[in-house]
Length: 489
Image 1 (tube, helix red, strand yellow):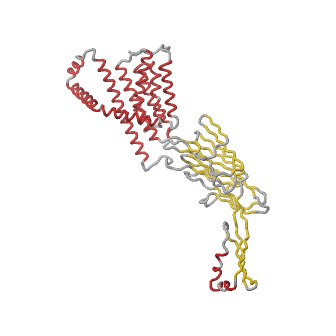
Image 2 (cartoon, rainbow, N blue to C red):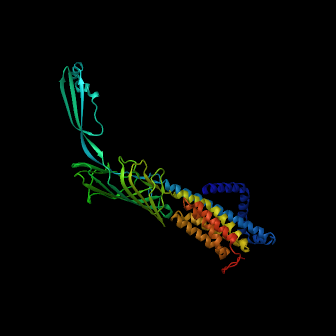
Image 3 (spheres, one colour):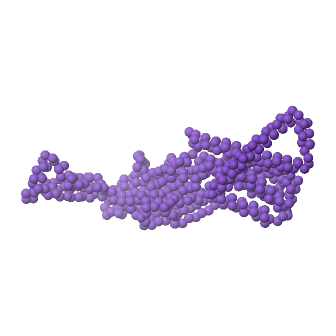
């Protein structure tokens, strides 16, 4: 909503500037001619200014203030255009300073466990004598379509038998296959720590550093010693993994080929359990997800704790946490699930901060900030009964423009939040120096508004709070000034 209003105001100012372009050309030409004449004949210029009547001088002075405002608008427009172009060139460069903004969400799949079981299938066909005579020239392929092959396993043995039953021939095939039978995890304890780094505080792009730690317990559900398989898939949409460790019962396992993830093959006694621990660190962008929907069996117990330095949002159709604790700069989410079968996943996403877009919004708004400062200071001066001289107003307008322009230029070299605070703080200091300390409150309220555009989700709220504070200051505050502040001439 804020961006829509801002675009409308920019278009309106652009149309107004287009209509005023002839007058601006005449004014600029007059200034240039006056400057050239002043270089070669100062006395004539002084005489011309001295001939101006005292009644006309205030109007000319305020025209000069309007000219200063126009120059300030033009300077801020140049800073905006240069900044947008610079960030565009940086994003299109061959080199990169962080995770690509087009990268996908990091998805961690769940582990799978199974035990190997042997099953035997026997099939019998009774063949009439005339059909059996075809077996000799065509082989067993003549009856293969009638036998079929059991699915879901590897054939370990295959035995074919023929015997006569009266005038017919009876064919029997016995197949023994090895199948993987899924096993439930007794418990799944997962801990994830996500440290989000935003370009607002100096990062090249929006990304996070994640630390994953999980412990899975399973047991042999059969009454005999069983050969079992445990598979932990690697995350997708992830950057380089580091500090990756895979343990079983406290002993580190080295897996040579991890193209299919971490895989363990081994035997367990009946009723015995094994504990697997997986940990790694990685870098990602946009969000993080734990895929519960890929499990082939019901989840008996899942305890997942996610800690983050930023409050995340939840992906659509995801499982919401069973509890959540939010603090200042910290979020702790917990999923404690038991005996569930779900087609949903656990998924969180973070508000994406685009450096060039957010800074472009801030700098695009800066001419509006200049107008807001003009309105706030004028209304406050009328409220307290102070008169602002034209030279002080021109100095204040130039101070605002210089401070805001410096804020835009500093974003090229320092983090955006630091640049905005330094530039807007400089503008406030210069304005109060030009007008007097009594105007520090309307100046602060007007010149902190550009900083609101660096927040992706709360810009409207911050601007509404500023407007509410300004209304309180301009309407409800006492007329008297209890502080010792300089009077503006």
